[in-house]
Length: 206
Image (cartoon, rainbow, N blue to C red; front, side, top):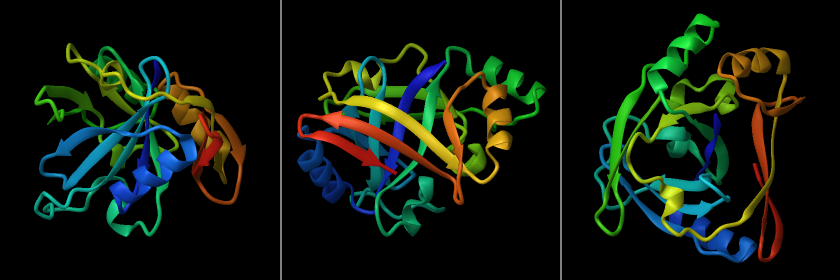
């Protein structure tokens, strides 16, 4: 498994994208809308087949029936809200994790159209089921669709991804069920921290 993307959730997509452009020196590319979820995103490459997803409310959609994902409705400021790892057979990986004592949730189908009209389809485990406040990643399987990082995104370097949690051993057990590793320290509150390096120097997202 490998890092697919980091999720940077925000109450204002355009404002946060502009702020990151000033900090990193690159512009986040438009991603697309998530119909029915009331969100849309912008993307910055992290090298290879990894990217930073900046996701926020989509004023062009009606309010969703339920809450927007990643706690967006309750955010007052941007937050590194979760991360995803790429898998090739999401059903098999999910079953294996359950056998090891961690249930990532039932894989779901999703899709969106790029600004050019291309339809992207993927399957993922529910991000809201990601354990320990999102420190355990959700799973994503792109199948045969084009990966978003293959679309000529502006790229910055991901220098590190770390996490803190009051009970790091509990987090490590669930990470191990997915065969995933994460630098993890004991801390008062659960949280992810990513160190990026762009044209304007290092930037920390948390």
